[in-house]
Every structure is written in C-alpha cells, then in structure tokens.
Image (cartoon, rainbow, N blue to C red; front, side, top):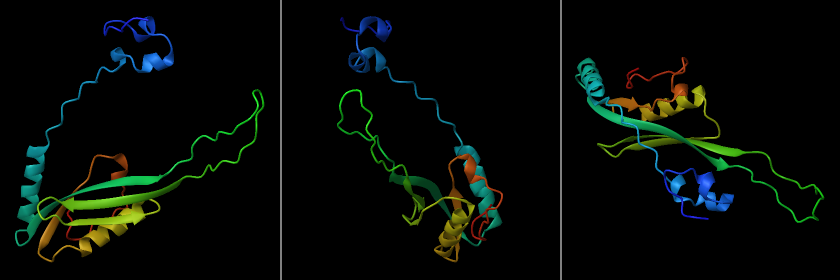
Length: 162
C-alpha cells in the first residue's frame, strides 16, 4: 500500500474500499461551471415592467421551495448468521413543502407550508403573497428554472406580472 498519486487510478494503488474512499486521488474537486449572466436581460425586463406600471413602486422578490421530511432507513436486527429474520419497517415517507418569497430590499418575507406541492398550492401561495403587498407596490417574483414552475393553470394576481 503506497500513497496514491493523482495521475494513478485509485484501484491500482489502494487496497480495500475504506482506503479507496479516503484516497487523496479521489478528492479532486470538480470544476465549477461558469454562471450565466442574465443581469442585463433581467434589468431590461424590470425596466419594461416599470414602464407598464409607472404609478407603482417596483419590488423584486425571489421565490424558492423546499421539501422537508423523514425517509425510512434500513432495518437491522440481531440474528444468527445465515438466517433471515423478519423485521417490521416503516416504509412510508412523510414530507412537508415550504414555499417562500423574500425581498432583499425591504426584508419582507412570505411563506406557505403545505403537505403537498401542486398547481393549486402554488396558486394559493400567489394569492396569499399578493394579499400581503401594499396597494402601491408592483411585485416581480423571480423563480428558479425548475421545469414544474411553468404550469399552464397558474393564475397570476394583478399585482404580479405574468
């Protein structure tokens, strides 16, 4: 067993999976891809929205959602070697979804906790979010690029541009 060089394959110089996992040759970090630069495009879109609503203050909110919950683990029991004991195991999963939107300028934050996430829940969140805005505010809600954020049944309130 010698020290692993980065130019060598880990399997060639390390013996055993425990040593392979701690091998310095396997800890080479992946390069970080360059970020897309949308700031010019976003700035143009914000200016366009402001021209449509000249009598309102424009506030930018960023939205994200998360799933929290418990997932079952492997069941382990003591048994004689060669036997296969039966063990009761909980296989259900329990999740809760959190949708939140925050404004970096004002610090305002709105959220919704739900047992599921679908178009109806997102519509409920948008209605709740819209109800908390001041009458003179036009909000821009920035979503990340997930595919399920583009449902055809979403209803945008009047103070959120489509």
